[in-house]
Image (tube, rainbow, N blue to C red; front, side, top):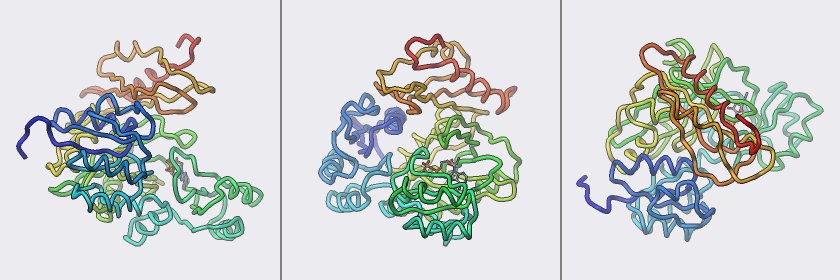
Length: 388
Ligand code: ADP
């Protein structure tokens, strides 16, 4: 693939932090980005040649994006697979991962059914369309259980924990739409694997341990602090998941480690928060890997450079307000620590605003890098008046 200027253009539906980090990774490869996002000046806009302002699922917006691009991809599941498919057919611009993959993943029930049918271990689940169906399902699955909206949930929004029969009606009312209910998995830890499908085969990044609070990813570390048999089992489940996915790209595969089994939680057909550590932690980042995969270049090495941890910088304010981060000097003042700022002008509670990654050397282990990443995160705040 000879390179010239302007280089090949990747059209990305979605211009959030994932689009921004895709742009940062694409530039050294000579690949330019055009993104589409409904919010003007989206986080990816400064690193993209252009932003088209329009909804993720708007056919005109996706067509305009395709007309400006040589390849199409998406960094958000809220786009419409039918639109992607028809625009790709009309314009001849290839889209990856395949719209069929997005169709499966968008609906948590369909996703779980397809994976279970392919032999991937998943928690027990039932489809539920009413409070009465939920009650019946829970007679079999037992309490507590996790009720999940089939579509549109993210960062735990769209999930309701149901702890007793008294909570059934209120829980279903919160979802108020097609749902699925899943046994509550009493996991020892959560793991994630970034799987990759390229022109030259499949691969995966080393297993990541992910730590959630209030169902939102807070910190992650690789290597995961577990035994080799568990790491191999996680990788084997990820390989099985990849065999169900169509089209190229990276896939965030979230897993539960129960101590006895690895169960699949869910898949994202795109770079994922649990893979942010790969920017400094691996020879190829998940973002470079996605650009390579969707533009038809061979995959890069997924080898880990050393133990690496990432802590998310989440909004720590109660009211929506202009965002000013304080306390970040300590990140710049720490060896092997790196700040990633997503460029969002406003902060609200738990909004993902950036992250801090800390890499170790031969003498440091996962506990050390995780502790440093957490300390640096704890030293940062969006509170206007507070000394961090
Ligand atoms: P989202 O799609 O909003 O990210 P997930 O379905 O991945 O939501 O759930 C977010 C988090 O909630 C998980 O990472 C896990 O911590 C918890 N969770 C989800 N499903 C279950 C379950 N069946 N049992 C126990 N915890 C769960």
